Amino acid sequence: MEFKVYQKELELQSRGWIPTFHDISKEVKEIVAASGIKNGTVAVVSHHTTCSVMVQECSHDIDSFDLEFLQHDLLDIMRKMIPDFAEEHQYRHPGPIHAQYGRWVNEPGDYSSMNTDGHLRSCFFGRSETLTIKDGVVDGGQFAHVYFIDWDHVIARRRQVNITVMGTTEDVECRKFNDGAVIDTRHKFTDEEKAYDVHYDLQQQR
Image (cartoon, rainbow, N blue to C red):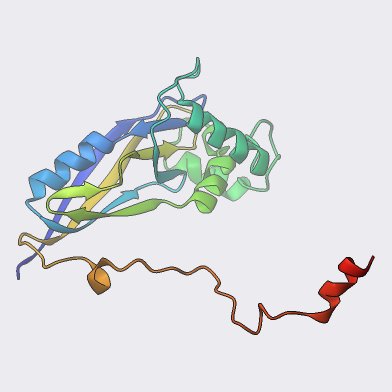
């Protein structure tokens, strides 16, 4: 069975001033189709430390911030956990050495390093997602979309997403484990746990 690896990079433009949610579902599906891989996995990975990848339902409704309602709900929660960087020295990072490093790598100003909130949100949320490919199709369920989140809202930035498709170009055998028998993990009481207890009679005697 042939094993194949196929890689592509997506270039995205984030807007700044508020975190950007990019729906890259279409591009991920196109890359998987172009790979020729029938069965395997596709990894979607952020190139950046202030960005995340998530798989979630499309919320359809869009507000005046150009965010889907579910995306803005998520942003509201993240802001409660990790407040927006709104004033100097709100966080320990960036310190003076890091600010100097930013100048050395030609950042536009010290303010562009005031994205600590984006770094911390990325740490909490994660920078990648991996999905299964079945018969040449990304298996995300009925409602899943793939989103690239740029938490850094200090300035507009060009972003990169790395897509790696791995797997076989051949068909696979039946995927059903144990002939598709349903696994019931709910607790099942033993006869001893369900046994009569004399204290039950107390209620009847009142």
